[in-house]
Length: 134
Image 1 (cartoon, rainbow, N blue to C red):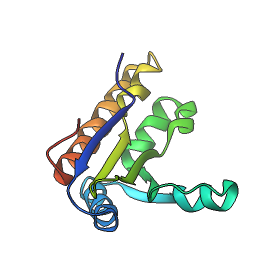
Image 2: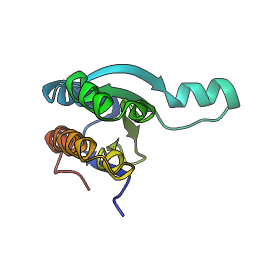
Image 3: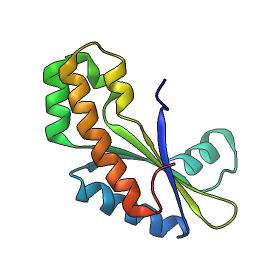
């Protein structure tokens, strides 16, 4: 079974890594459609103190259009979530949903092809942030 997440840990601080993640995604044709500040939301809703972390809802419009044309119900998996989370040691973790999961959920070969293209782009974005996805 395919891992559901790809990740890389950077030696840079949280705020810088969020900026770098946005830039890396943009270089691969992804825009950020949504942003959820997890730490702020959990503090406001549950009074929980969590390390800084954000979910970036990334979308590559041409790939999303191909996926939706191949299988309209795949919209429930869009956009690709990318999480940037501060670690206790001052480093930052960046995790992304593995688009290969999308291809595994359907027998549609056109969807598998789109998932492969998205995987290559997400992997390239993560690799540009550090030593490579883990």
